[in-house]
Amino acid sequence: MKKNYFLLVYLFISIISFSQTNQSYKPPFFKDNNRLEKIKPFFPIIEKIYREHAEKNHFPGYSFGVVMDGSLVFSGTGGYTDVVSKNQVNNQTMFRIASMSKSFTAMAILKLRDEGKLRLDDAVENYIPELRNQQLTKDAPTITIRDLMTHSAGFPQDDPWADRQLADTEEELLDVIKKGLHFSNVPGLRYEYSNLGFTMLGYIIHKVSGKPYSTYIKENIWQPLGMSQAEWEFSKVPASQLAKGHRWINNQWIDEPLLHDGIYGSMGGMITSMESFSKYIAFHLNAWPPSNTDDVGPVKRSTVREMHQPWRYGGLNAQYRYPNGRTCATASAYTYGLRWTNDCEGRTAVGHSGGLPGFGSNWLILPEYGIGVAFFANVTYAPTADPNIQVLDTLVRAAQLEPRVLPPSDVLLKAQKELLFLLPDWKNAANSSLFAENFFLDKPIQDLIKECRDIFNAAGNIIHVDDIVPLNQLRGQVTLRCENGDIQIFFTLTPTNPAQIQDFRIRRVQRGR
Image 1 (cartoon, rainbow, N blue to C red):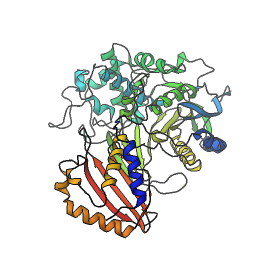
Image 2 (spheres, rainbow, N blue to C red; image 1 turned 90 degrees about the vertical axis):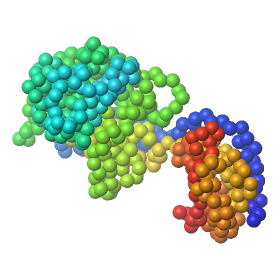
Image 3 (cartoon, rainbow, N blue to C red; image 1 turned 30 degrees about the horizontal axis):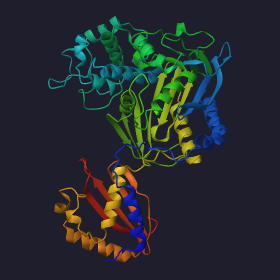
Image 4 (cartoon, rainbow, N blue to C red; image 1 turned 180 degrees about the horizontal axis):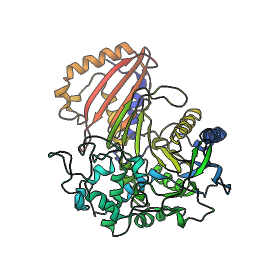
């Protein structure tokens, strides 16, 4: 069967271009260079979402920020740091962000791990001997640092109790453990949110580094990121800069005194401003995509990406509804100090909420879109997650933002060109070095010839060859636009050098599918 002239010319030029194999990595990139300009028209809508939510939920004061491509591109504030003094909130106002602190504690643990000072699968009892021999069943596994970081140590959810322990000392923590702990589950089996577990991580940071968790995080994370407006102890924050806690009861705000910093602060005691926290968001976003540039942050970019992986499954919400009312199933998990979700549209979000008496907060990023948001408020357990979800969803959909696209690797392009040159007759293919040793054992060549000839004959002459769509560095799909329909070709390469085709699939599809 003769190939049409178009395909012959296309393949000749392509093979000449790729006669030299270059296996250098090409990172995903944004096709749109005007992303910021595309979202700017929607800033008034974003401001309205936050303002109306704050008014509806009786926030005395609030601060929000939008981070894109490494910078705080939009922010706003409203209300008061204190309803008595009526000092207005600004970008430098420092809010207690409660459990948003957990990712800092997790990052500190990972930094110590990267430095070889601990392992995530170390037994916690090696650092806290008081925990030894405490277990729910005789066959229960030893609790590990990884269990603490993923809320799977078997401790019960403890928000109401733990929120009031913030100022406790390390000695008081050890006394609680010495008296014996009750377990809700056997370690390692399921997710259950535990502030006690992250408090133990704070103790381990001190024991391993020789510095209190608060000092270690300040020196090794805050300062390298330039987070100058961050504290653990509220009495160290200038009064004019500190957001005071409030509670809404009987249609009025009452004062909710802040607790001093103690060992439980490692699970929820951090105090910071939007101006400073936006730098932390930017650091997380800048960890994507993987690249060959030098690491310059407090921890490796690969470590940050590790924090964004779903280490402990949380659940599936088949009927989840976005704020605009559309139903979209969502899977959730806990990472290392962060929450992870993936929705029916394939959109991955990472972030965390925080709630304490007097405060509520949330931050959320879409790593593949290079954008994130944060929302702080100074009223007890302020509901701040939903507006952040709404804002990100609004920006992505209204501004038609697209995730990064992966360019095809040179080795994938080379294999594609050589493969297309052989189709549909597979002439001399059995003697070609293009195919792995398994290929013709799995797919007899006579079957391949018949399948391809039938499909090419039915599709007619080739009009256009689309750019290959890479699924990763070694897997891709290419579409041939033909007179009577399209042909889709899918192939996967081996990890060997040279990379060879190990799998191949072809099908005819109706135009537009």
